[in-house]
Image 1 (cartoon, rainbow, N blue to C red):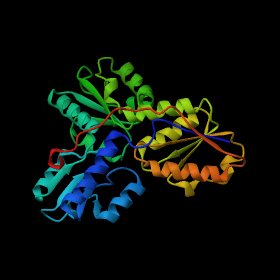
Image 2: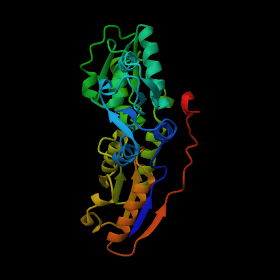
Image 3: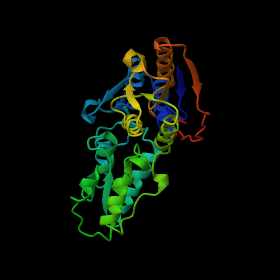
Image 4: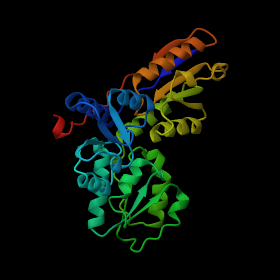
Length: 308
């Protein structure tokens, strides 16, 4: 049985930066360090940082006045920033720069009297933060059907932004529906879409040419990991999301000749290594591990000024 590793996979630059911010803050300032929401959507990462002294909270009121607080990679609304300032918190911002770019764009359009459509998944922490940047002017759509129910007062001044953990493939149908109904809408540019999400989906398409089963390492809360599983299914592969090697079912491998393995943008490589080792152990015949050509995404983001 072949085990074929996708590339690129795992941590993106925004996730790397967010985790590093928490680690440096703990080393420099000591515990406790408060973090609003999980720094990234991966329980393995969060549990490791919690053991080092990070305290993850959802409500700013749970942070003692004057404490140090880190915003997660998913970003926050202006209202959250105001709450933190009112409590005198020393804030370090780990928001992914690509999310910040969406926030800036939404704020600009709102100031220019545009209504805004946000393509994303209701309830996702990134979506909640983005909505807060133009709450009175922004409407959320998840599906093509949602587009037909939009109530837009001035179609000539209408813009669109997206959740960054969606790819062009994820949003294409909705964007086409938006453009069909509102021909003058300002759609996002291609470079507004998260490079990591698109690259990992492109890798799954390559894997699907050879594999008959795909295992995606990621957290159930991770939007981009779930999209990888959905894409695998769409391409005709048996596709499974696992948090760790313990989640692998031996029966999955009984008829597999080539198993593909990849990971969402918030999954550490150590989990991938453990999954591969488990697959080798469970393989019904001798297993050989191969990898797609390694891809260097050549993207990195600077740390916040306070930590440089």
